[in-house]
Amino acid sequence: MGLYMFDRLFAGALLCLSGLIAWTAFHFEVPFQYEPLGPKAFPLILSAVLGFCSVWLLVKPSANKWAPTGAVLIKLLSGVALMTGYAFLFEKAGFIVSTAIVGTVFCILFGEKPVRAIMYSVILSVVSYFVMKHLLQLNVPIGMLFGG
Image (tube, rainbow, N blue to C red; front, side, top):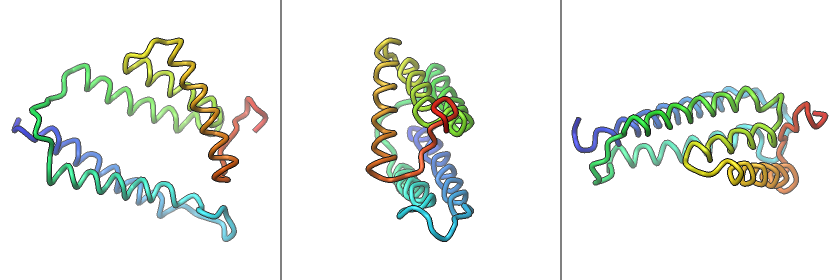
C-alpha cells in the first residue's frame, strides 16, 4: 500500500465513527427538564472533535512509514470488543465496576503489570465517578452491585 494509506484508512474509519456518534446523539429522546448539559452534549462534542481530527489526518497524514503489524491489529480489534462489552456492562454493573474492568484489561493489553493495572483502573474509575456525579452533576449509573 501507499506511504500514507494506513493513516487515511484509519482516518476514514474514525470519520465514519464520528458520523455514527453524531447521528445517534441527535436521535436521543430528551425530556424537557434535564441536566444543564443534557445527554446529547458529550457525544456531540466527542463527534465534532473526532470528526475534525479525522479530516485533519485525511488531509495531512503522518510523514512516517508506519504499517500495522498483526499485534497492533489484534490490539485494535480487542479495543473494539472491549468497548462493546463496556456498553453492555455499563448499565447493569455501573460506571465504577465496568470502567475498572475495561481499564484493567486495556492497561494489561498495552503492557502494564496486572497489579498496577488493577490499581490504576480502580482509582481512575472511582475518581472519575465522583467528578462526573458531584462536580459535573451528570447521571452516572452506580450499578446493581451498589444498589442502583
